Image (tube, rainbow, N blue to C red):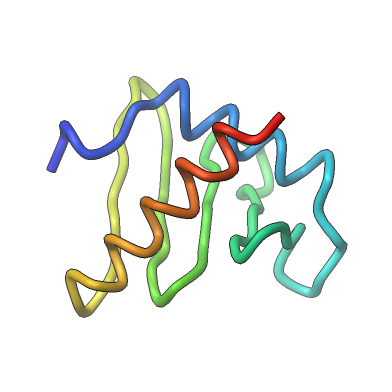
Length: 85
């Protein structure tokens, strides 16, 4: 699973969602994903398609999902936002 996610890509997508997203109760929502962080800002979260990604120090992360299809949809959304101009 470690090869599924590029830390630089996750942080770039997080920043793009924070900059362009709509404010919601959970965080900022943009193109199917919600981005938010913990209080100290050291751990960031991306949430959508039934998946929650927790990303922290040293490019460590945890994906929480029930079905592989959810994970695949989530990763596609990350790629789409990352590749957006």
